[in-house]
Amino acid sequence: MSTWFGPQKLPTLAVLATVALAAALAAAVGHESVRSGPASRQIRQGKAMAEVRGKAVGPMSASSRRGWDCQVELRLQWVTVAGVRMPSDERIVLFARSRSCLLQQGGQYRARGLLEPSAYGRPMPWLAVEGGLKEVRPPGPGRRLIARMQNAFLEQASRLDDQGRILVPGLTMGILGNQALPGSGGSLSRPAVEPAYAARLTQDFRASGILHLMAVSGGHFMILASLLVSIMRSLRSPPLLMALVLSAAYLGLGMLMVPGDSVLRAQAMGLLSALALAVCRPAQSLNTLSWCVLLVLILRPSMASSFGFALSCGAVLGIGLGNRRLTALLEDHLPALLARPLATTLCAQAGTLPVQVLMSPGLPLLAPLANLLVTPVVDAATVTGLLALLTSWLWPPLGLLLARLTSLGTGVMAFAATWLGEAAAPAAWPSGPVGSACLLGLGLMVVIDHRLVRLIRTRRWDRSWSAVADEDSGVPFRPSAWGSIKVWLRQTYGLLAQLVFKKQPKLMSSDEGRFES
Image (cartoon, rainbow, N blue to C red; front, top):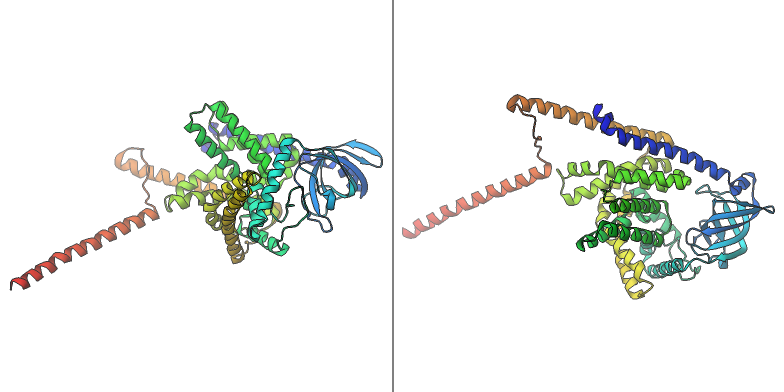
């Protein structure tokens, strides 16, 4: 027990306790701030006509509500109900039709409509606008350029097959093709994708455990960071310049993506890692994740109730805690080409399972196999997708070619999701906090059991070795299954070679004796 709670572990335990306390306080503050907003107070009393002014925090997307053409999320500045104007910092979902679907991300708008509670999805007020929409301030030049790039990319992606139209925009910029409004200027021409096919594909990705590939994750930032770091190190750049380049790249990539909770987590961790690089300190994933959670929850308390943010943090936590040890264990039995991605997948899956159970009661048993099948093509498809996003507005044929290459990778993902999603349904598991507590307890038991077994084996081996050699140094040798197979194949080949070469002289001697006779 001293190795788990000794003096060396006190800083780690203190950081974990601080993060847990900050998360609890932020959840309470965020919940209370949402409940005390003017829009939230009004919808608790009932529906009402209201006038709002706010900023669009994301691009327009296809409406998930029947009877409406588009929707967008607004961060409010003030709300007017019954002639009383009240300041607000809430977020609402605005639904509009036809010409009102021209809102651009980053612009400020004034709208009038029916304020009502949400019927599904996130507990966020809805505003149904019938036509009273006015632009107060257009987005800046940089945001307009990004909107042009995104529209050009969506136009090229709309020329792909059905799975490409859906998955290529989702993998590249975080919005599925059937949810986007393609065309420049926000035209309402819907993509020719059957809603039933899109729903079935999404269900297959969820059942196979690779739903995260339909949205932007930290992989985009890791690929960009590894590429830039390799280039800057080859040029022998100083750490400060490298940190500035990485920070600018993280900010630019975050602006290209559709705003999301996982994008926010990846961007915040990237900036903290760049700060550590600037002061010549090694970047540690767990410490960076702890500071990221602290800062995000303090600045945006509503993230404490976000499933996307929790899933992203859980995946990073699982990889940071067990990836290195599990990789070393699997490399004893599998080639490194298979052991490393499988270890990363298992660790990320273990870190996100308690949150997944809160969302849907069920354990995707084939998730490791599905992630192992799609891992070889994910990075390549991500790179070609980002290149298509950057070049579609400058050279459309090149953008279309890169989008088609990305579609080849997403085709492999769709095949793996359909094959494995239909092969086995997720295993039943208790839902809600009870299921999450059971998973956490099971994981804790596995960790304790592993450490106890390792401690017993180490002490037993130490006693046996000290009795023979009177020394306490060295590590026990344990041949792996893959190494045993290679030794068996080598020995079998050697035995067969000896048999073949021994028979050949005997045949030659008999022939020579017959010739002499």
